[in-house]
Image 1 (cartoon, rainbow, N blue to C red):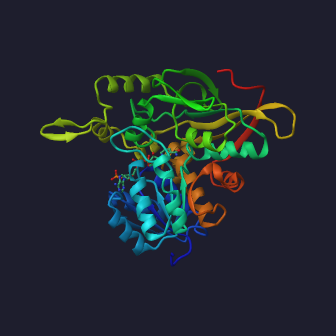
Image 2 (image 1 turned 180 degrees about the horizontal axis):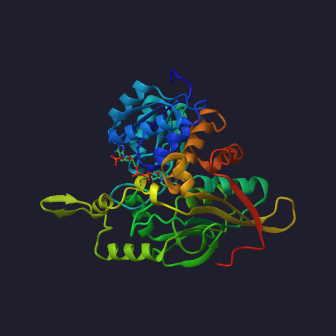
Length: 407
Ligand code: NDP
């Protein structure tokens, strides 16, 4: 459809978008022209100025409310991209997918759809678009961030190269960074707090088992970070992994939080600031969590002060491919907040999401991952994606452990 090969339209201008657009500009052979549209145009202009400064590449900018499907359709028709990259919020997934369907353009995102009035993130709303995308001859790639995203690619790489079957899977997400603030979230505060305050759910013997939020805690010694408390949570890749790896007996997701973070979050919850039901304030309806998000530090402002590393990976146990019995492997990436900031002006959590969004986009534009319909990361060959992780700032490491995890 597009005039310049590799034309992309990126929606949203937060930390993840900033990293992704910088990385696209650094790969001008793949991304022929970059267009950036978001609710606040000045944020797009700031990203475009930084990209010009760092790479010499131009980024065209626009103002858009992505929930307005006709406006999105007009913008897509004007730009004629080969791909729309949705790095706004999960609430915008369905309207952007509608606009893609109407214009016949492929779609990518990093987080699955969530309705605003319910903290419930599930793939079924987006999977329901499969037949329409298939009939339109276009592709949607869901969840091309780190988790979801790389965690699924890591798991499928283990399944391709090390393990015939995967019996147990634990995804460990550690942010060992320190941003110097009393309380801040590393990606969109509203989405982050909705995710953390929701009930935990893990996959066990063919069904999801629900437990109260943050009720299961384990200490784990993370390489390049040190010992950290990690908490079991629900995360959306558990849904796609349990679908695409049917033999999985147990799959869990863990995320680290410091005591200070938990203390602040508990107080905010206790006083009702994390609620998503509208309340009346001075004659106006407001949603407490949205108000809280508005006063918390913006994730894209944390880069300058954040030090330390992230360490995200998967531990999988199953039958070895070479017939040597049951084996356990740990595959992970360590990312330095300072190095991420130096390269793109953003902290590591935005970096670890924005780079895989660029790589997923490259997979689609280069025809390495193809198909008509709606797809998850597990459905494609992990190898070309894994090669690009090594080449574009998120190198990974795999090692064999003595046995299955003991927690
Ligand atoms: P930010 O809040 O920093 O950025 C979101 C951007 O979307 C903002 O620029 C915002 O505009 C824009 N936006 C919001 N609503 C609309 C709308 N209606 N129309 C157009 N633009 C809109 O978030 P992050 O950059 O931290 O995160 C971006 C996405 O990445 C989120 O969906 C998040 O869930 C996902 N994510 C995924 C991860 C993964 O590993 N898979 C990890 C981390 C994040 P404005 O500037 O006006 O507010």
